[in-house]
Amino acid sequence: MYRLTHAVQHYAWGSPTAIPTLLGMEVTGEPVAEAWFGAHPSAPSHCADSEGVEGKSLPEVIAEGGAAVLGEDVVARFGAALPYLLKVIAAGSPLSLQVHPQLGAARAGFDDEETRGIPRDAPHRNYRDRNHKPELVYAVTTFEALCGFRAPRRAAELLAGLDAPLAERLRAILAAQPTAAGIEEAFTCLLRPETRPGPEEVAEVAAACEARLAAGSPSPRADRIVLRLQRAYPGDPGVVTSLLLNPVNLQPGDAMFVPAGGVHAYLAGTGIEIMASSDNVLRAGLTPKHVDVDELLRNVDYVAAPPIRIAPERFHGATRVYYAPVDDFELSVTRVDGRRWHPLPGRGPRILLCLDGRVSLRNEAGDRLDLERGQAGFVPAGDGGLTLSGTGTAIQADVP
Image 1 (cartoon, rainbow, N blue to C red):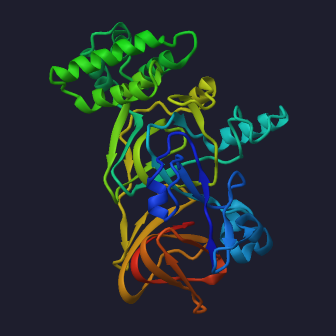
Image 2: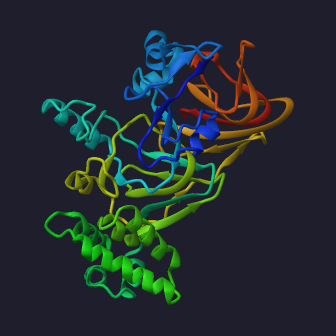
Image 3: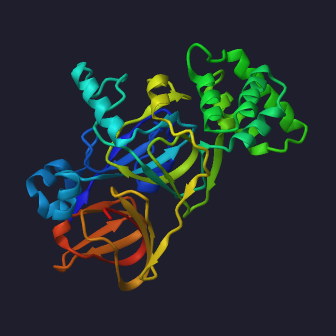
């Protein structure tokens, strides 16, 4: 077992306090958007000694250990790489309107950008690796998001009550085609350069939402989201796309799965994310970062569906396991209170993060690793089954 460091991402939408407080870091006033635990080459973790002194990177440990670290089954399915990436995410302001690619699109897009000589760390690069990026978010605090498309008729109802020409155009599209094709046309109309509304048209929709809210809106949450996004990104057409999307509020302990191709935007809150090991993000708005509307539109799933909430299954009482409908990862949360040793699920390469309190890990050989709040460990497949003791909460990432 190895003590594991994390890599911090200081994106502008991050909270200056949430992750530092959760992980026991110094609060500097700089936004801290994400803390990464994994082996992705963009920001790999490092293994550290008992004093916290960094040693080899996790990719180096995996390369040297091979199947002893990953397990024969993981190597057979995913090659010599850790298939997941664990993150802590803290949205102090809304994130971009985005989609993650399917596996085939990621491979084709990565190879194309490699052929064109676009540096992998270039700001305008879309594909930084050849992997898809389905993900699951587990709420640590109340977590607000937009995820997937509303039913077309419901989106048309929301737009019908707004006194703004852009809202009426979108409503007419959906009324004529209350199908996935109608959603695609409305969404595309908002984003493509040739039909993209100007800032004044977006402002008119926001003003109409504000007026409806003051008059006693039948959809106050949708109207408030429009106003929040207009304040954060004034005039961005992504403000209006929110009326086409499902709003989601996760309470602490809730989890949601976002498939590749699912359009989404996280609005506020702190959570734990687990995903396929990828940094591929296609953006269409609500961001100062690189936007590639055409590439995003090629990767969107337009079928309306409610957000995919994942109900946990109990494992030996103390553990809740969140099984995502993919082969790359699963997430479990274990709460212990006392000296009893509780078995943990999973036997492959695992990352464990102590979310609060103080816990002790023990492998089949009897080796122990003590973790306090904010500390993490990496457990090779060769260490076998784990048990956990102490008083606190541990997050575990592993491979099904």
